[in-house]
Length: 146
Image 1 (tube, rainbow, N blue to C red):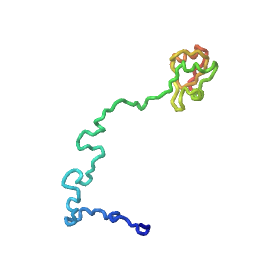
Image 2: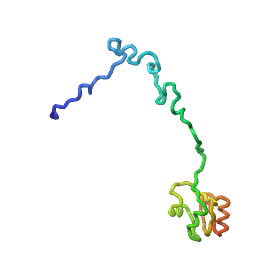
Image 3: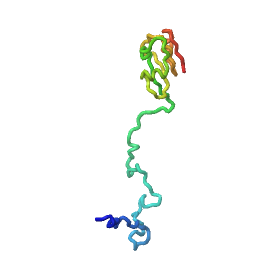
Image 4: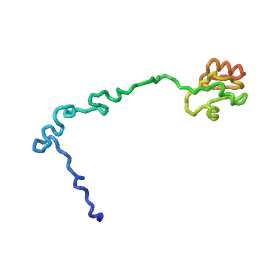
């Protein structure tokens, strides 16, 4: 076979079905839609998840849980995590990211009083629990809200 002998398949350019053009055409009267029913009517569309009157899958599966749109997510930082820094260190977000205690995500940092602090530190965070604030100040450090 040579390139000049190539030709398209005979059905490649088949004309489209002309429906509703009289009974002699074979596609007249109901125009290939059948008798009655939703799909025979104009505008009779069935939604993609319609299952023939059966309870749709979307409504059958259980919906669990609740996501409060107004809730705030925090990086939780405990006092025991701060013992790795030297005395007199200023603990900031950048230092915590470099030390891989928190990730680079833009969540706010909250310091909680779990564990015992043994260092004198200046801690800068978005929020402190009351116990954490007093524990930092008892060691001679500062708890600064950024």
